[in-house]
Image (cartoon, rainbow, N blue to C red; front, side, top):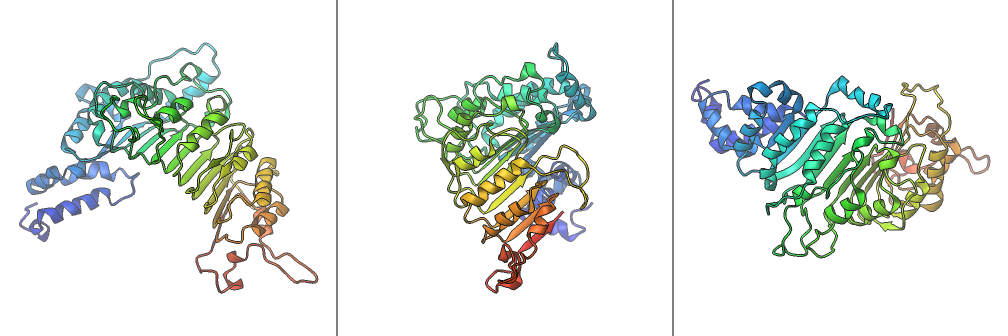
Length: 455
């Protein structure tokens, strides 16, 4: 394409550069467009290539697909990563390491049944040292780190590298988000962690990101000052070490807590690797500015060890299973400004819901909802989402009647809640409708943004 033969070629370099950024990053963050588009744009002609190479932010998504790395080892599997690192210059970078093995991940279920399992070779795990040898020198530019795997060994290998202290003084000062995901929810149903030989996570959590400690660093500085989001999905840590060291001050600093964490997710952890009551209370206490908490098939089995106040918490997603003291958790949590609550039951059947299906009432959900009804835990609640929650109609009716501020209700596999929304027949006083804000016609003062979503 001749750059002078069209209007695009006459655009100012700054304008064309902005168009390139929109083309690459205008799609959702999960899209692979941000990875391929910079290369496509740089291949159009010499003018576009020059503009693309001068825009370092255009190359800021460092996505490493280990399947492609392994298949291209003979021809330089990490060459694309080296190129992206060089082209990103001094800009902040987002790192995504994809280590999904597909059908091969089923071997971990076979490992669970063997008592003589020994550590076997994993090509995906073996790639991690070479990858982090390239990434760690650029640690001061990291904006986000995400590692996704359907098996444990790649995650375990990455944690060993991330937990190893470094002698260099640089640290991940720009890091805003850490997401570690082991997407094998099935194994989290079991009490024992699999593979058991790699259950213990050694070292100081994320010590490599914090860098070398010295007396020249101001004592009030948190170890990772911009860290806002931590997601541990199917990935456990040394929990005591995590909140004492990673979320708090480093050994050479005063014992101050980090006030930066705003989003925390702990999901799908086997019973034996969940945080204890004391550990989880310590984690929450180290995140006083938390705005969103996701706790799905995880958390302490015996509730909180004491009361924890989270005055800025606005959103709570709680997924429960057959074990754990749910009431002990809710009773110890003080979140007066919560506006969005999601409650998720565990669907073990895996069947598709139909309106006539009845999986049986859920005693744990019944206890949770009754406790919320009698204790008015969240006086400012506006949004309620219920997933696979089956409790008696009376429980739903009492719950909805005690949430006068409710504006949005989402129901998924929760049929009895519909009956609770029907008018209550009262022979003398007439009909009353639970949760009036859900019916805009009952009050002119309720804004027309009410929603009832059924799935």
